[in-house]
Image (cartoon, rainbow, N blue to C red; front, side, top):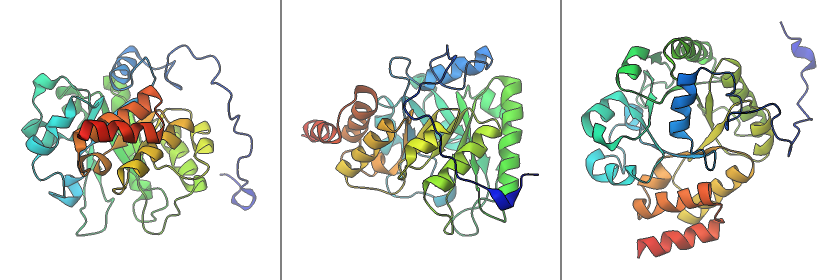
Length: 290
């Protein structure tokens, strides 16, 4: 048991120093099985080492929220511009043609909705992820939530156990409750807990001091887009996260609720993969919108 009376914040994060003894292009993945590496290489482009994931799993707790009323009309036109699609098995089977051949990050836990207390989830059968040829499974952790922290950590460890058995990587998704501080100390702890329990990817939020969060997490981090922002602000968020070491973005509302979602996802890809500045990305958005 750690001595909780003498906890000290980390200070030596080795910023600017590359991960040593790494041969695979994604950090923390050298010693994984071939099948897990193969699936990760579908999600992250080898040329940039990054990914633009399109998240549209919101309906499993929110229902048909704005932009997700019709997956066939609102989301499928965006799919070709994403590196990976993140959604639930019901939506994928019902609305995403298998001929798209897009990597799938399968939302692999389910439970309560916005009508009750969130985060009381269970994990879906990993064999269903295998049947769907999923490239990864996404499982949420409610770090700091007294009611559901232990259960959601157990969900992640179970998913990792099964993922290792079947060769499917797991993405730990850090949830933020109303009483949780959105700062580097919290996100650093939550991200590290994901990795310590076996997550191969971590999805978390950008914050001040994010470079320390990334440096202390031994596996790739992608950022959540969060609430809808003006397009230039969303592109600035992407730019800052990539500059601070993120391996990509997993955006939903900032894409599908944009005034021009197809232009927006291409602008996001320009920032993530091509190194465009926020202003250059916004100019690209404006040109494509015209």
